[in-house]
Image (tube, rainbow, N blue to C red; front, side, top):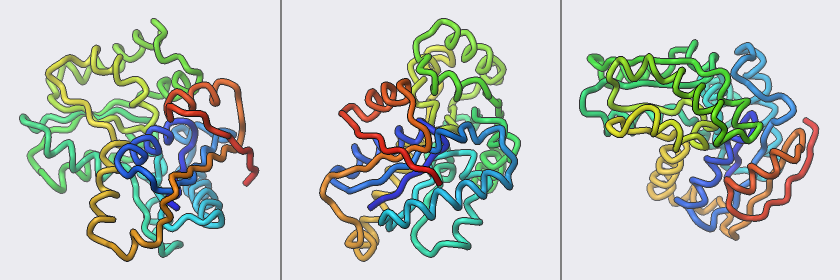
Length: 261
C-alpha cells in the first residue's frame, strides 16, 4: 500500500491526485485531525508527529510513504529518511520542479503555513535549480482553519485570500506554488484573485506525477504495492465537517476510522 499522512484534511487532495494518476493502487491515509494544524507547531514537535504517523502507516502495511503536508515536508523529511528505509516522498520538491518548468519570467510566488514559509525551503530549492529566479513568499495562517471548517465558498474566505495574495500580485509573479495541500480546495478563489496570467501549481498533482514516474522506472518497487483499488482512511479525531469535506474531496463514500497514536 501507499501510505499518506497529513495534519488534517488537506492530504486528501494528494490521495485524490494519486487515485487519478495511479488508479487501482491500494492506499492508507492518516489525517492527524486531533493535532492540526502543524503550521504553528515547533519543528521538534512536527518531526515527532511525523515519525509517529509514519510508524502507524508502516504497521498498517504501507510500503511507501507520502508526506502530504508541506509543514512536515519542510522540517521532517531528513528525520524520516534516516529512520525508515522504504521510499519516502515529500510534496515540496515535485512542486518546485513543476513550477520551474512552467514559469516564463522566473518570478515565482509561494503561499503556505507560517512554518513552511519561515523554513525558506521553497526559495532554497528554487534557487538551487535556478539562481536568478525571483521568489516571493507569503504566510497564510488563516487558510487551513477555513478549509478545515469547510468555508470554501464564503465571502470571508474570498476576502482573506485576496488580502494574502495582493503583495504577490504586486510583484507580478507568473507562477504561484500552493505550498500547503489544503490550498487546492481553494483553487477557484485563488485563481480568480491572483489573475488569469498566473499559473497555479498544486503540490498534490505534482507529487502524484513524481510517484508515477518512479514506479514506472522501478518495477521492483511497483511489485511491492497491492492493486485492489482499496483505500483505508484513519483520523485521530472525527468531526461531521471533516466527513462532509472528505467525501467531497474523494468524490465517493468513505469510511473514516478513529485511531489514537
